[in-house]
Length: 266
Ligand code: GDP
Ligand code: MG
Image (tube, rainbow, N blue to C red):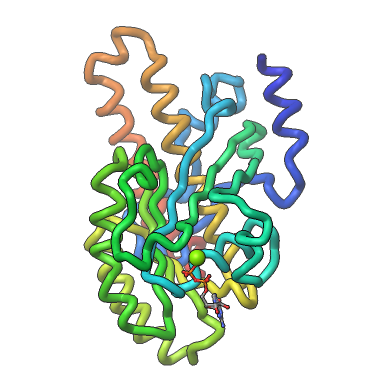
C-alpha cells in the first residue's frame, strides 16, 4: 500500500507538490493560527500512517453572488486560463485536482455552481459533506460584501466543521487604496465568521496559487489529523487526544506569535 501511495504522489505534476506549509494572506485575518503542519501529521506522513487520506477525495465548494468571479477563480487555478466560459465548454460540474503533500497523494474536488446562485439559494446537496467552504465576493463591487455572511451561513449549515475562507476577487480592477478599504471591512466579516481572508485576481493570477495551496494544506492537515486520531488505540480515544491536539495547537500558535512579524506577513 505505501509503495502504491508513494507512486501516486510521484505522478503529481510539479506545480501540485506541497512540502512546506503555505502562509496566510494576512495572519491577523485568519482564525487558523498555524505556521506548519501539525507534528502528528508530519510524522504520520513520513511513516506512511495517513490511513485512507491518500485514497479519499475532499470536497471544496465555492459560493457567492452571481458574477463575482467564482468560475474564473476555478479556471485560473485548475487550467491556468482566464476565460469564464472555459468550464462550461469542457462541460464539468466539478474539477478534480491531485496534489502531493508531504509525499502523500491528496485529491480535492472543487465544486462551482452551475448558475443556481441566480436564485439566491443553492440545493443543500451541493454543500453536503464539504470539507472546505469558500465564499467569494468582488473587491470592485462593495454590494457583494453584504452577502458574505448569508452565503457562509447557508453553506456551513450542511457541512461538518469545514475549513472556511472569504476571498475577494478582481484585485486587478481596484486601486491599492480602495482595495485596502474594502479589505478592512471584509477581513472583519471573515473573522466574525471564523474564516480566513484572501484577495486575489483570476485575470493576473495574483495570489491564486498561494491561496489554493493554503486551502489545500489546511484541509489536508485537518483530514490527516482526524485520521490519526480516530485510528489511535482505544485508550487514546478516551478524551486524551482532544487535549493533546489543543496543546499542540497552542504550541504552534505560541511559536507563531514569536515568528509572526518575520515570517507570516505578506
Ligand atoms: P461567477 O458568476 O461568480 O462564476 O463569475 P464569473 O467567473 O463568470 O465572472 C464574472 C465576470 O467577471 C466575467 O466577465 C469575468 O471575466 C470577470 N472576472 C472574473 N474574475 C475577474 C478578475 O480577477 N479580474 C477581472 N478584471 N475580471 C474578472
Ligand atoms: Mg459561474
